[in-house]
Image 1 (cartoon, rainbow, N blue to C red):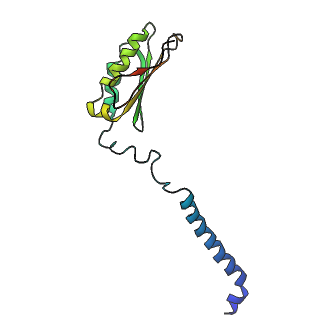
Image 2 (image 1 turned 90 degrees about the vertical axis):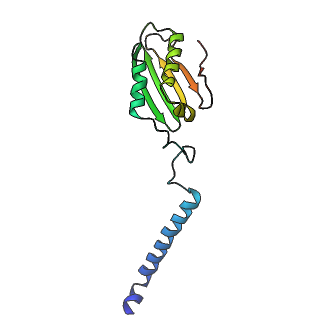
Image 3 (image 1 turned 135 degrees about the horizontal axis):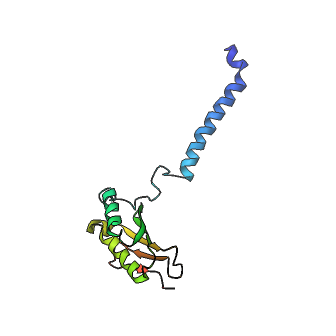
Amino acid sequence: MRKLRRHRGKIIAIIVFIALVIGGFYLKNIIAPDESKAIYGERLEGQDKVKITEATKKKVQEALKENTERVKVRVAGKTINITIEVKEGVSRDDAKKMGGIAIEQFSDAERAFYDFQVLIKNEKNKEQFPIIGYRHHGKENISWTKDR
């Protein structure tokens, strides 16, 4: 009992500190709830059923290897970003066809689930490139940027 009286101030300070820490956690949960959920929320439900494999990415690269320097396929949420660097001398119309060929390499289920964004660039022909195409998962056609 004597020790408790002697350290009464320290004990009260520790109890107040613990109460403040617990109160801080409750306040954080009120201000920023569901911090553990994914940044996309529930929009990605079903993505585990329609996975984009490395084999599919390679298939896209193989289909376009003839007139390209480099092809990169990246999945970000429900969007598949395809970056195509075409060789010198490829026309804009041929490049747009390459975007369609790239998207055709994906299965029907993948095309029905994912949105596609195609960036086609050529470092030597900056007058006509880059061009960007976008295909919504509910549409059939690619919408391209306006011609320069």
